[in-house]
Every structure is written in C-alpha cells, then in structure tokens.
Length: 236
Image (cartoon, rainbow, N blue to C red; front, side, top):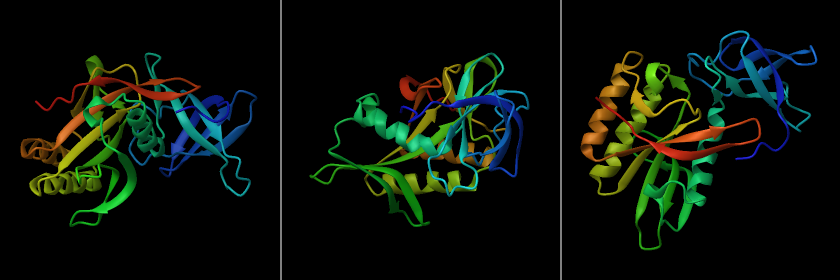
C-alpha cells in the first residue's frame, strides 16, 4: 500500500479523546490530526515521538491530517492506522503473499454474517460455493523479546467476532483470523492476557474449534506499508 502523497513529519505533543492527536510539524506549526486507532496504543503514543501524517484532499474535513506512523523506542516504525489493515490484507492476497488464503476466485468486504450482527472483514469465495470468512486485526503493541500483543485494550467486539468465527466453523465453513502486524521489530503474535483475559480465553477456544489464525508482519516506511512475512501466532 503506497501512500498517495508524501507524509508530513512531526513530533507528537499528545494523543487525547481517542481520536485526536496534537503534533508539531517540522516547520514549527502545531496541528490537530485525526487518530484512526481506538485502542490504548501502548508504547505508540509517547509525547515527543517522531510521527508522520497524511493529508486529505477533502477541503471539508475538520482535521485534514491523519496520523499514520510513529517511531517507537528502538527505532522501529509502526503503522497505527487501523483503517488501513483490511486494505493491507486484501493487497497481500492479490499479490499472493498470504499463501494460506490463496486460490479463491473473489474477495468481498464487509459482509454480514453470524447471529450477533457481525460483518466479515473479507469473504473469500469460489463459484463452487467454497467460502472463507476472514477477520482482520491490526497489531501495534509489543512486549519484550520481539513479541507482538493483541489486543492493546479490552475488546468485547473482538471477543464477539471470535464467537462468530467459531459458529462459521461449526456450520462446516472455513474461518480465519488474520493479524496484520504493522511493525518490523516482532517475531510472533500472542494474546495479551494481562490486558483482556477473556479475549485470550475465547481465542484459544476458537482455535480448538477449528478457527485458523495467521499473522503477517509488514515492512513499514514513510513511502509504503506492505505485509511481507508470516510470523507464528503463539497461544501458550
């Protein structure tokens, strides 16, 4: 996924009200940017961090800038825009990167399914009726020793999605949880049990029922973000 125009570099002043961030740009101007991430952004929202913003061409937007990237301790670049994760996975599918999901004829997004009013991020299908429901999760949090963690905040919605994926498998169809890891300094993904134990428990139950889980790590730069490398999902 290429950024459509050059990103503006700055320093994070503060992130607040979940969806807002104040940033001082390199030319000295302070701007308020949209923060497209509903999580806690552990380790990714430290004041003083180098950040990069995109700018919308829509003159009607109240906040034309959108926070896209942050440089965390250790120098790794992290993509914090969760709104891009579905597009990253779709692009990786079309490029043949995610081999586990190869071979389907069509890809549809935001398809209603399940008994709890969910939407599948992606529905893969073939003319013969073969289908695969894909739930995409953006990963930005990391712990010691190169371990990525999900979620970074309690997510009742994420737990509901796991239940829905389990129901898909029980109905004889395929369901896959795909972690889009927008940082290069990690080598595996684990459930963040200390943050949301219920999510971790439900994830393990879903895997035991036949839901599949894959994780792909992105190459992140100020020019583009692309999923490149499969890393393991570990549930000790």
